[in-house]
Length: 324
Image 1 (tube, rainbow, N blue to C red):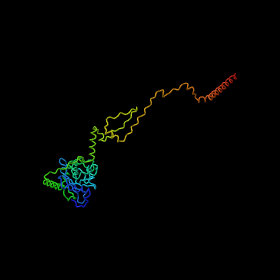
Image 2: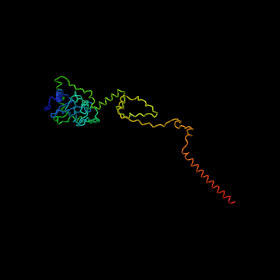
Image 3: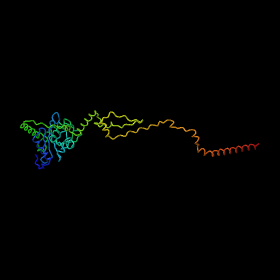
Image 4: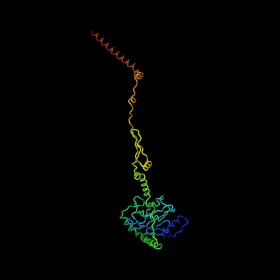
């Protein structure tokens, strides 16, 4: 136990001390957690792997917990120090009970609940998650066997196996003295899925099932949302009957595509409107001013040519007569 001096009036300090005392007086054979002597807000835990047939069943893993100054209003963070093939070593992991998702954490939960949940999380897939790993079953079994002898310098140099052996002895002694079997705490329903993303995905699947099994929202099939082209005849597009409410809400949140403009159709007007006929009377009342203006010049030109032809003809005649 820690030899620090601290303000016992602080709600956070009182809560941490109470949890440390409770874990010490009611031990579990499957896990152990206690604060470091140098820092009450830093804890180390030792955790047995999930039971058979899990590939972690033979493993015992060690890790580090950091409590925030406002604990339990905010959740702790977790790191595994022992290689497991499930979590990255010495990297904060993203879980629904960790600081990555404060919205999931409930102050009523404590470190005992976190230990039970953390053990169950090892069975969940870790691909794509912060601090998560995907390894083959053979690799995980090999690391599980090696984990038992792993030692932490901050925990007195004891191996993981030695720490849990002490827990087993304390549990057996308590059961003999009190005449009852230690029952393990159940994992809260909300924590049965290790990652917040998995919880949200499960909620989405349930919502989709409730509205008729439309999978387009779950799969993110944005391509299914297409613009409706208005027919060239100007008739209104038919109303959609295959959309569920969930799909319609998703469509409203997407950027609306502008429908392609229809090609203009040639006008089909009656011939009488396209080529109106002009009355004859109107045509006669509209003499061409150009024709009227050019008529005197044309007459003069024709007259001049006629006169010249007449003169030439007369010369020919006179010349012919002079020869006889």
